[in-house]
Length: 221
Image (cartoon, rainbow, N blue to C red; front, side, top):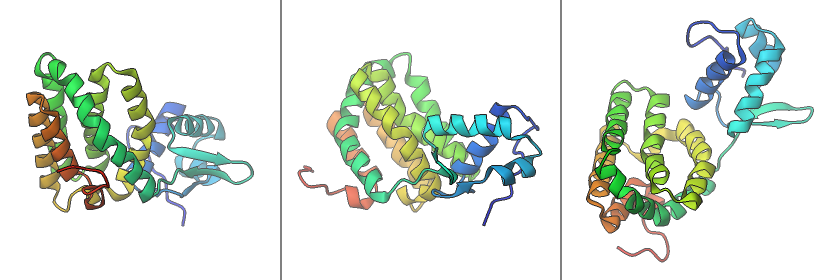
């Protein structure tokens, strides 16, 4: 069944306005992974021409949220549970290192940014604003890679972020049965990151991940 698209903000018929409307529909799960984005229906719903719509779809494709197939159309990218589990199994090993490398910056001028992401996550969860909570969630973890000043780590995160975003938009609450607990977990991660304790960070990260990742082969503790 096709979703009825509506403007989520002040009406804008520019490609950027259309892009933000479609992106919001993807990230809040309104259009699920694998769902088709039918140009004719979307253009009719929004009262726009095909030109800004196609530009918006191209931008979403470049971002990794949409895939286009010849003669079939545009579809929301699907990310399997196995793929996310594999990403997280690697994150469990490299994210503590990223946190260790970023510790000095986080204890200094970047400390407010880290704490603000936790506060943003708290407010979003209280409002049940899934897109905003996903943004805060990923900004939190991405900060360690960004501030690590390690090019390989930054490239890894860039490759993972869109897939994790899609997964979270489809099944965000799998990371915690209790929204409050998700905030608490990020508060703990922030605390050990500020302490510069990579081992404690890894333990907290393992507890933060879904249960299936908490006992990967070769893990210790």
